[in-house]
Amino acid sequence: MSSLIHPDRLLPADPSVRAVARRLYAEVEALPIVSPHGHTDPRWYAFNENFPDPARLFVVPDHYVFRMLYSQGIPLEKLGVPRADGGATEQDGRAIWRLFAANYHLFRGTPTRAWLDHAFATLFGLEERLSERNADAAYDLIAEKLQQEAFKPRALFERFNIEVIATTESPLDDLSAHAEIRASGWGGRVVTAYRPDPVVDPEFEGFAANLARFGEITGEDTFSWSGYLAAHRKRRAFFKTFGATSSDHGHPTAATFDLPPHEAEALFRRVTGNAPVSAQDAELFRGQMLTEMAGMSLEDGLVMQIHPGAVRNHNGQIFARFGRDKGADIPSPTEYVRALKPLLDRFGNEAGLTIILFTLDETSYARELAPLAGHYPALRLGPAWWFHDSPEGMKRFRAMTTETAGFYNTVGFNDDTRAFPSIPARHDVARRIDCGFLAELVCEHRLDEDEAVEVARDLAYGLAKKAYKL
Ligand SMILES: [Zn+2]
Image (cartoon, rainbow, N blue to C red; front, top):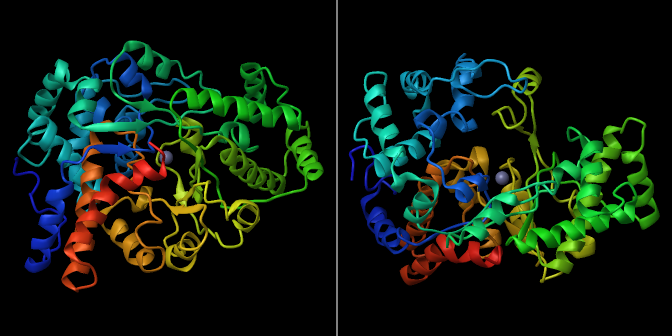
């Protein structure tokens, strides 16, 4: 193992606790990766082409990386991030890499640094911390390896020991990449997930055009309420034929509503009419659709994930220049108890329904989310997410939820990533932190070690498979 990553990294510093944590980690270290929610590109697995160069693997597509560099005044153009208007950006992978390497110190203390070092060490055998001085040597070494057969997406998928991975697609996606994967005969298990935001959120860019396209694809009249709902049912069934076991909903808040049918229909007419949609109606419609989708989940078995609380595209200039998902989404306080009540009044007692809740607002964990998930049979808690997908975020998650919701109302780990090489690193961080947390409980005689072993295995593997029906 390279000197870039320490074998005891992230384990508790106290020697007696560390000894227990090491034993627990040894039980889970090599378990297969179950990745039930993420944003890798299915075309990678479909076409199995070599990743082009180190910059286009590690820098250009990773908003965790370029948002930090941007925050220190480095323009996204210089990092090769494509512009929405097709304008000029840096195309030389080596130039992008040099800029990244010269600024590697910016990532000190961040999970990004840990993920990158893990990939550099375990995949490419780098032994030295990346810096301006060794940037070219690291680039050459990684670039040379990326051209090899063993570094193509499918080979890496197998090397990462991925048992199953879910990608996330819009209902407007034809899933041709997934069809290609199936047709190829390759054995890797890649499934899709139904992410209907583009046709559910009246404030999504191109909503009306998206609805028209939704109608063309499904043969339904998506400008009538019943046709629109029928289109969702059809598309969900189509996604299931490509392995989907879940839907995913990225809403600004956790608001849900359960309007009488005639009011829901009138609301639908307002948000699809020619008049501008009020912010209030947009929120009402998104919230109504969460309840509609929960009803569909009860029918077709798709597990529902709710990812609320991100104020998307906070930086208007970056959005105009580069589009969505450019590191400018910012968390905002999120209320769940009253917001989810309409949906829970209708479906919360259904043990056959699984709704997985995520948060970017950690103040809700102990006060709202753990009590909700520790009561309603339909609810589970998703893992520490996005800005909290970090060692400290995971510790806070366990500390604030376990005493009320236990471990078995949580669902294991989600890597939720677009950055392919970070997948093993992220799962490894979660396994280490959970083993550390369990080791503390063992050392305080709150849990027997044989139980801790069982929980560690469930958190690393079993719970994700069970909750997501994979
Ligand atoms: Zn996600």
